[in-house]
Length: 246
Ligand SMILES: Nc1ncnc2c1ncn2[C@@H]1O[C@H](COP(=O)(O)OP(=O)(O)OP(=O)(O)O)[C@@H](O)[C@H]1O
Image: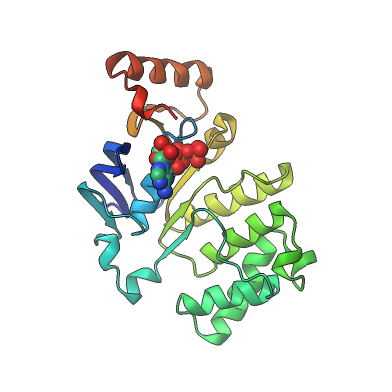
């Protein structure tokens, strides 16, 4: 099966600081892959490369089989991402923002209207449907960002810490949306700091440390935390690199 999202031996540096070092990851259609790692491990940088926002100095990035920098209109419409701040306009309402995102991703007016109502329902945003985005709480703004990233039912989805600001109900709602998208065939890459949470949503968990993928964890297995620290410790023992510890 062709990968929908792929980084193959990618390296990237910010000035003298290495952020990714020989980093490889693959996400296939219908699969949820979670990246977990310390602050500064390289998760967001990997996602930025996949979204075509950074060009790797070495290695290859593939988004739906193409170089993310060359993704044309049609392929761009098959991709959705939430990295850093949501793309919502502060003066537009939740509904207006989501509808605009749907139109920008190529949905016609009628389809965009239906998809907007559906994703607002899926993310339990109905009470704020007519609220200006600027007036939303942090958690609801994060839900809005996820709605804008997924309203067009993309085939490849990248979500950087999608539940970091969410309450327990929000976490469940977003988990359900991610699982439903994967069940419809989407390839999904998420990052998180919460082992329990990724264990519930992911098919595979990869541990990122010092700009590398240093191992995998089995979702649902016991003692995830101990195994995580073992992998990190083993990686440090193999390649101690104080430059990359941030
Ligand atoms: N724009 C930038 N300029 C310079 N250095 C950067 C920039 N963005 C990231 N870095 C550095 O690259 C490394 C990887 O950062 P990255 O944001 O990818 O980590 P992360 O795993 O997403 O961390 P977190 O869990 O805190 O979000 C860090 O050392 C960070 O300081």
